[in-house]
Image 1 (cartoon, rainbow, N blue to C red):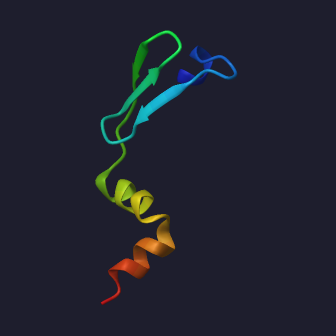
Image 2 (image 1 turned 90 degrees about the vertical axis):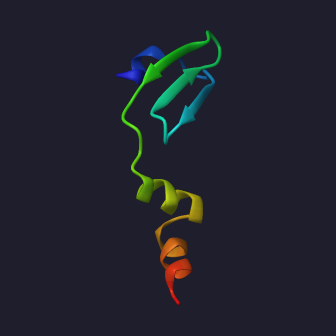
Length: 57
C-alpha cells in the first residue's frame, strides 16, 4: 500500500473526497478510494457526536 512508499517524517497532502494522496517531498501522487460524502460530513462536523447534535432539530 501507500504506507510502504512513504518514509518516516515524509509530508503528505490527502484529499479524502477526491481519493488522492500527494507525497510533497517528491511530488508523487497516489490514488486511493475516496471517502463517501457522509464520512466527510461527519469529519467536518468534528466527529459523530457533533454531527448528530447538529442534526437535532
